[in-house]
Length: 87
Image 1 (cartoon, rainbow, N blue to C red):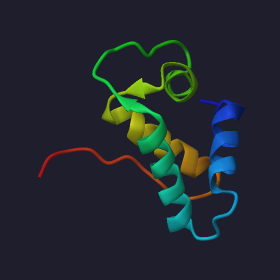
Image 2 (image 1 turned 90 degrees about the horizontal axis):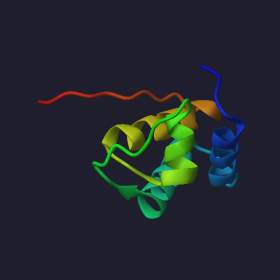
Image 3 (image 1 turned 180 degrees about the horizontal axis):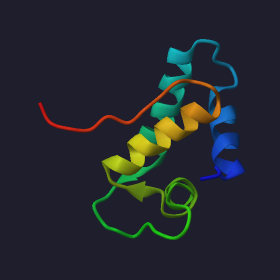
Image 4 (image 1 turned 45 degrees about the vertical axis):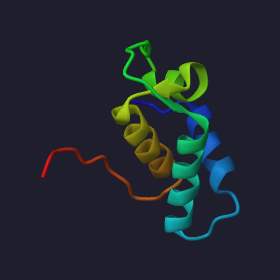
């Protein structure tokens, strides 16, 4: 699906001063960790759940954090994917 422009704009803003992909990833991770809350409540929904997570509810479970990070990094050209499972 098409990515809402606000998500890419946030990623660009967070990584504007970073040159290396690793540094960009660290900037996005720090933003998510420091500005959003972990919650098991299922209060995120609608047509654009990542938009709701990042800008409205600002809280969600691990899948929202990992998806948001991967999508934001991809939007600025940094290869990223979500991996799940147990070892």
